[in-house]
Image 1: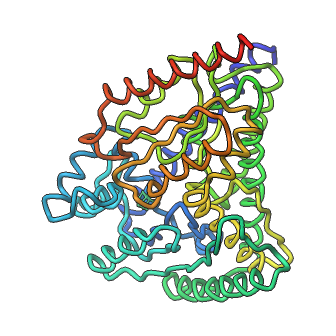
Image 2: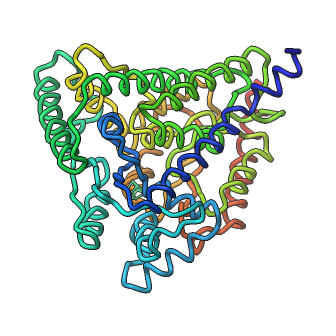
Image 3: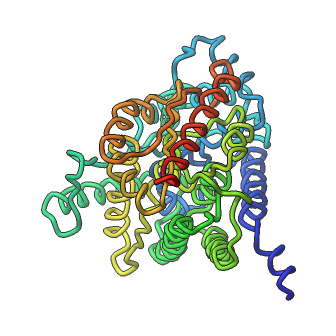
Length: 431
Ligand code: SF4
């Protein structure tokens, strides 16, 4: 293969293959809905895919289905429908889009979503718990909630070998055994430990790959945009966790990013400002939102979204296949706790990232719909600015509701941010 052929084959493969996997995933959901098959509704912060895959349960991620309605610019139709039956404009837009989707018998822009045979959630977001109650009321859906003990204080995490950690790990492991019993009851199948090990092996490859891909973006120029490309990778990390396809995808993605690093291929041709994004993207104007930064030569190297919405897979935790259930409990404790920390205690990790990724600016994007992610961001910004002399931008909109997304206002603020960044650069150059 010539150099040019290799380049066109490898560069952009992650986005192409990711889109294809997404289509296949929705085809599977469509077929399940058509045949009235079983499905598990799960969430991105602790999907427990590692156990559900052993029972061959197709997984529905309501958060991902909802954000897809916004990317496809029809979210307002779903939000209006849910508000018409009494859901408040203030609550999480993902919930409302799902309520309307259920009322439409699963009708989604990408196909038909099956009804839930069970729901599996963690305590990583309080909305998960109230959301699952809606399916309980609608369908009498059995709900399993995994309680993950969170960090007791900023910087106060405990680790393997510590008494508190071991107690927490045993607590999680006991709950996993309960989940296995629930799955056996719903599917009528016995838990297969060998299949479980195989699933964990695939998940290990994915965790290694996700961690490595995030790390490769430290390069100059950066090799993927955390906001746009990163969201595609994140979709695969969630939807294909524990599968051979997911593992192969991440091996290929590492190869693509290494190729780009080696050949100095950046995400934009003229990278001038290296940024971090804090929060959930603005899906109603997803492409345009990103363009408002790239037009100035700004690109996002990392985001807290890529950590918490991957359920902590960014930590690269690899399961010990010799003690699979205990190791899954340990991995969940570390990774879901990390996902929660990346929403509540980001300041130190952001400061570390500013140094490691040679960051010029931090963009905070609190949103109306998601208090879980947005509460405390103003304080967090102050803490980061107290620690580092860094430019920050604080812009508010939403991930679903176009009524609170003002493109003109956002552009004004973003333009002013870049003018400030340019002035900073000139000042540094003049020293
Ligand atoms: S409140 Fe935020 S974290 Fe919770 S489900 Fe909604 S978008 Fe997700």
